Length: 104
Image (cartoon, rainbow, N blue to C red; front, side):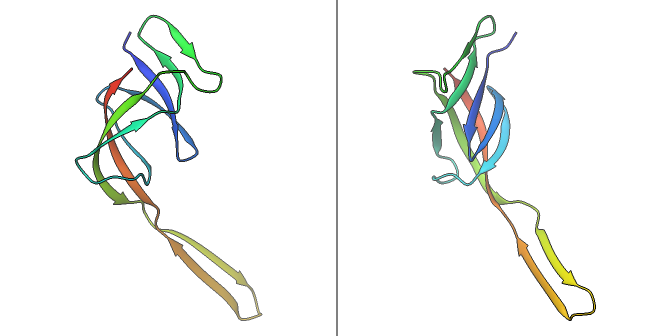
């Protein structure tokens, strides 16, 4: 079995393995740089699973920033019929694309 970790960032949890690519909430740093995710909730070396309370001490996941992208537009539209009330609001979340370099 392959080594994996469960990390938390941006209020969400992700199961990651070395070499995985994932989109997370916007993080500091430029494309080509590296970022260290310290909030490791669970860590497996392929044989044993270590679950943190709430985090695993000393565990870190290193990732490389591939690029910054925007998510598809989400449109919130409100309307009250026969009253002439309409409100339209759009939002595009900024995301960071990460490639997991190492788990340890």
